Image (cartoon, rainbow, N blue to C red; front, side, top):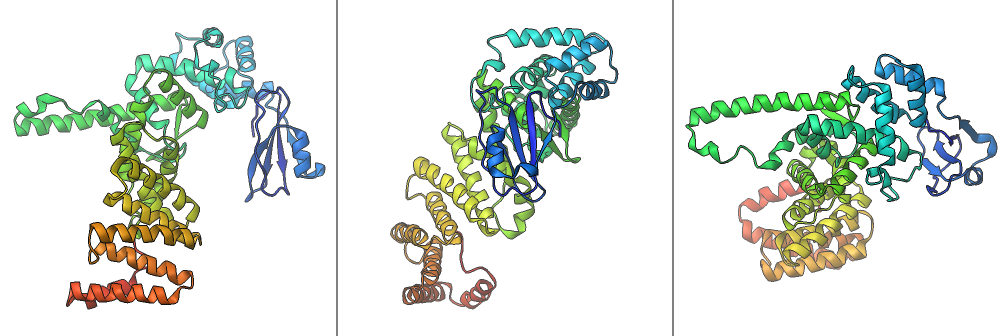
Length: 457
């Protein structure tokens, strides 16, 4: 593991769950506590805390990256060492941080031979003294590691400003990628980043159909070529890497720096809305047949929790994303995630759509199911009663959604040991469905017997 100067990494073989603290204001030695394979990873602010959590004999100190190793990494990524003194000065200025070294080497390599290690070092120092730069952002997240401000963030800024001037579309791609979970970013969700600008424009309608089709095919071909070129630019500058031929990976600090740049330049909401729109459209409801798609996108949906948009339209899309992700979490048995996601969907829909809107009631029902999954039957029952009562009043007692909410309430009563009340509700549902469905009722009962007792509606 590579680490920065004045920082100690501590490995423990016997730790159990360890808490995390940060002391970014203090120039004490920083110690990371890493638990052996299959356990937990955490960070503490000093060695004293680590010693309280594990035995001294179980602490292994991994020393910081040495100057010789830093130079070797720089030479490997640059392809040449060039002026040894300039390279040594640069890696020292970068505080031997591997990500910063990789990014700086990529930037120099891509701009060579018209750009040298010395020129990069000069730019680095100019950026360091620029009081309006990202480095002076005082938020705890960006400055949580006080070594990072003089290396990773500056190297990111130098490279990004150059890419933004020369390849604006690549900068757009990086902007969109910065909102996703850092791993497994699907290419099909970021290919359409240019569509945020409004598509093909008004001239399309005045052309003949064959000519329009021909131009659309050319446009798609050009778009694919442009996308692959932008991906290659971002890879060349070490902003992203490829997990597979269809997914990308992006360092968390690069994502954070990108979002702070967007915020400083009043573009954060624009790209956040594009991210939510794309992800919401792609994330299906959590039925079993959709599990493969849900699993691939679930980490990104959880990342979207922190990216709640401000405008009402995108906010509704965000709520739909939270709801679908909650349905997947519920069906796969994750009560904690199901409650967290469904509560957010319900709160937003109640505020935007009103307490009696169909989607609001569906979200409320999902919160009830999530509470039931976690064994919180009292809360589940209270919500399900409210859903049932509103649906009976608004939709009528024989509406399918009303019957579904009654059936779910009956199941909750059974889990609470309220057998008589549960039986009464189940009989009512059965009789109503038999009366309304007629001959179809027997077929419906056979299908229902193959499905779960709890239903989403």
